[in-house]
Length: 551
Image 1 (spheres, rainbow, N blue to C red):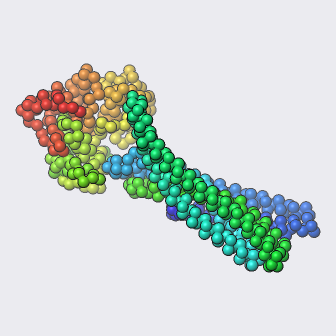
Image 2: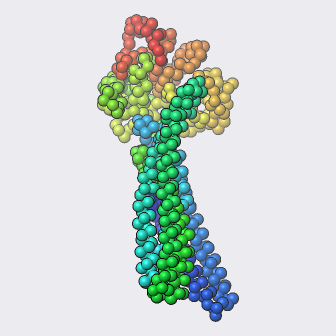
Image 3: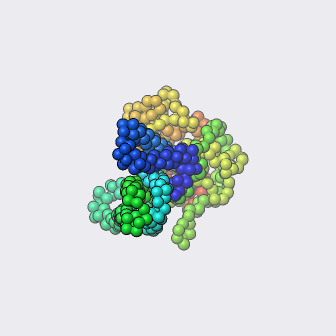
């Protein structure tokens, strides 16, 4: 199983110790059975000294078995912890484009359901290892007692294994289906949570979504998990029945056919019945282990960045003097025969300290251009020049350090930090909180905002605060002013942008505020993926057009 393979690759020494302890525990268990058979069942041996030996044997068994289980639990939970941290680091290191292709619902399902399944699998792993090791050791002991009876036992247990293997393959199939419907259910959960306002306003729409989308997925999930549990229960019952049948067959062969003495038959029965509980527990643990194995494969299928360490901290580069995009294109993938939307080829050049406005209709490619410019998307063709030098593939992490941004779909973190993740002095934070007129709303302590639950416009002001505090050479703002009231919108264009310009910060703002076009050094228009610079006369001619753009 992939679960054991990953354990062996990552923590072979600890896993080997656990297996050795499990073997020791199984051998001691058989030792207890043998002690009962040869010492306690003989009346001549029932002395206090024998009982003290028996008690000592039990204490050693308890210590070894407990040590084995604790070691395996620690190993399992350590593996899950490392796996969880590894996945988050891989996710952070993965390109935005790949993360978008995976989808947030699938990612959440993997980071929650799959990690939980692996954890539960490790909880049941000791039962499987102990049951398997005990069964192997017990079979060796039975072979020592009687070869003919051992042959019968081996035949019946082999038959049990064959039946179990066929049932396990069916259980695996249904568990894989369960995991697929898990993804669909997470997508439904996300849709219901994100669309709760629309569903509340339209109960009929909510009812239709429930019956046409959620309920079928939930029903399919129920069917698949029911089938998996049914086959697992059948496997357990088959194993239990065959083991009890084995006891009867051994007695018949020993007493009816004269293959062994009644003492040997009784010893066989004692060992087999003792094996029954651990073996049944091991069989019962198979679905959780199969589920864990399916989840590990599901995690691997995400195709995240293989780098499990954070990108090495880079020295903050000096703000660029010039930045150019030359014949840069980006094309979206499509599953249909329709032509994919392409942005570019783009030719765009800026100098340090310029204030640039980008205008254009909805869906014209402005946000894609913003991601290309900041290095979140990698061009499919063309090149980006930084201070005249082309940005190479291995230089993208350094290139991105030139930018801070407030995208239209931004997330507002509470931590306030510079470009290296270090705290900012309180005076600088207070200065910008005052400029953004948020000092009366929010406080900060030890680099954390007191709260982030504000109106959309106020949250965007705090997002701008975060971008400024990163102290990067260029700030990109995607429709930042759209959620501000007219009074503060004027403050943004007439006071905040000039203040940033005085400090040598390059500002690239996607905007439709034609009233403040004069605040920009240059204006570019994006139309159907093509970016063109507007002359002063073109700005004046298109003044009325920009005023009526619907976005």
